Length: 180
Image (cartoon, rainbow, N blue to C red; front, side, top):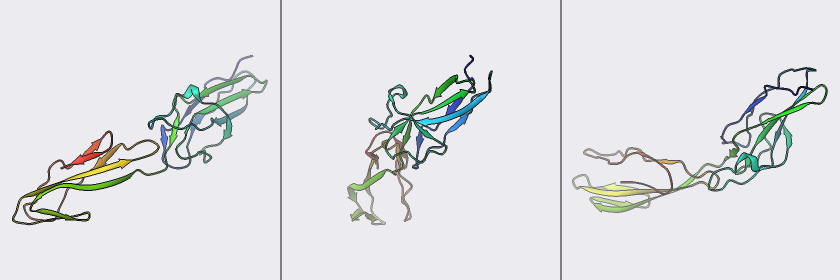
């Protein structure tokens, strides 16, 4: 009459491809021994503001194996490992976090503004006059429909003697991102 014990399951907080790798430890043999260990996935739910709903709000149980390639981009899932012993006693353990499948790269739109002095732009190319001071502002508006953008990186500018940059950086947080 003793249920299986010692089962554990681990999943990443997010997956960047259309499959999720699940690390699980099968339930230990107890009493009559283990008849089966079954891994299931909940029905997918949409994230809200890039955050998955609480694990206790998920329903459904589709039997899967690892890696689970039946997931849908832009959906959240919870996984459960259920052990059944040889006389029918069961025990289950679920993931403590939902997995967000986000296989779509963020997109961005870079704009150049505040062009002044010896600097001018044509399309997305910035030109400068070597003997005159000037400046411009770069704005990157990053978007990601599933998880939201995490950061934008502005690298160093190059191309001329006496050229200097300010605020060459990685900016984390919300969109849009600015560097001058």
